[in-house]
Length: 390
Image (tube, helix red, strand yellow):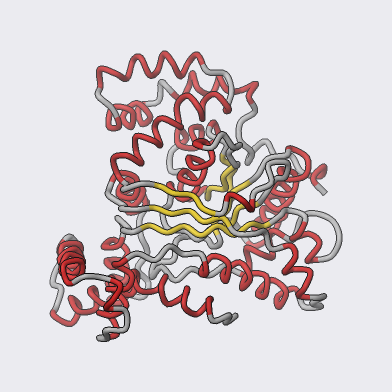
């Protein structure tokens, strides 16, 4: 299956091209602007000098990305923790499939957690809609990312899906590399995470055997990602409001760039990553589905259950649930001070929303959307612990 495709246009750059691509990257004005934004300008020349000495992705991740992510974690989180390491077999490769909270950091923080333990990092799937500039494309492909082509015609989309699936199978079986992919295209704006059936069907296009065999071949391991605070919460609420006013509203590239910047640089509180067992044995128990749509949906539900059951629930999730439902169901899970602090936080975030003419009803709508975002992880975890499959 893999031999019919040429992966060079979507795969991470081969190490033989590393220095050539890096020499071009460090001359790009956009990249230089980002460096000057991220560090003192006087330090930039020394950083460029070090970058030009590196000739492979392994050293780039460990010498450059590792300390950068540690710096970012120290500045913008209250700590990043990793659970479920016992489920990892270092002699195997996995498809880590996670809920999608942050455009950039979901995969980055998972790889940071792996780097801390001396584990091999995964290759990362990234949509070409985020590769707004050529230098961003070069940077991510130097950093073990592969490209998911979107916004194509129907026929091109099917061929792109076949190629992407073939590449994932090729990574697992032949390159012996793990991969990361989000459970859906785009983030769940209301933080209610559900795997897209179309994504499951894409992953089963490659490989050998029947539908379930092809899924088992890539060792799907759900990973649950929990951020205490979502820096983009007010931007998501703003989008809800603009779509409420105009159902045809669509974000601009500038909006996407601002979301990426906000997610990277603003405070996220505690972050927890929870590995769960790969779902192969549960796929075996499902039996043989004749309808691939039904099979994909059931496989997606298995992924969802694993992710939902493994959320880390913070005090603000309990507070949001009680405020949203005007209840005291979880009042023992937080203090009055924590509740007041969270209410002040929500008010401050909503105050950042720069939409003219917000009415009283729309303000209440925004508060409700903010509370829903923080209540949904708890709701989904409760449902999953009761064993419900949708």
